[in-house]
Length: 243
Image (cartoon, rainbow, N blue to C red; front, top):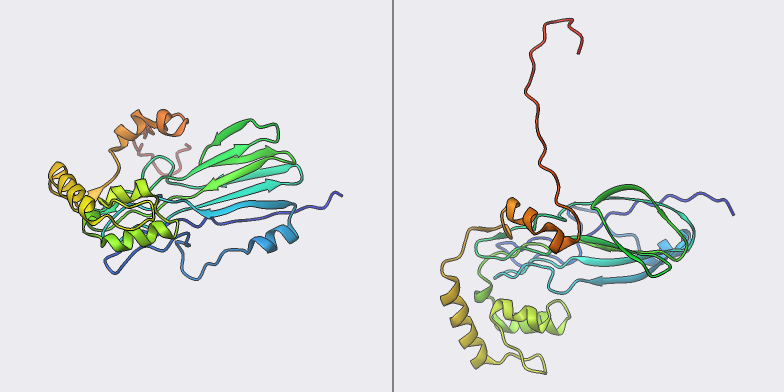
């Protein structure tokens, strides 16, 4: 009907694990920020929220687990434009004190005709049509401390809550039964093997150097690696000289 709408959304991701405990899942990086309820969005804007859930295993394993990111699906009911200004698509949220890095963010556009397109983390005025759906997947926080030292019962509880998968539990050296209970004997053996193969833990785990991440960027993300900026030398100019 020609009515104009503008929506500004902040993506909530995983908070890093801390010395005091796990990082919160799907949380704002800024204090006192809260999410806009999905029911409000659907009532006042021409869109539907078709997905809103934690991304299992996106938080980095650690003695204290990094928080999981969120996957939020926006289905547009009218044509319009969107802009994305996000980060952590190339580099991982760091793991600290033996913790492992968190999962990177990504954005997937599924067009109404079924075609898919991975979006850049920073893009402006992208045209969308009615029926297009944007899946906005945020980053997971890095883990803190050695994941092999996390209580196996806590890993099992995270799995029962859908925050960690059974495969993800093995990154902590924890083997689970079909009932998602800890197999104590298998867990002890796996943790011993993992500790021997790994050796000493690192203070920081970046998930690879920048050059390594750029080398495998297209394989990991489908996007071309960013170009390294070339900075020009400063030029001294006298007062009043035009540039």
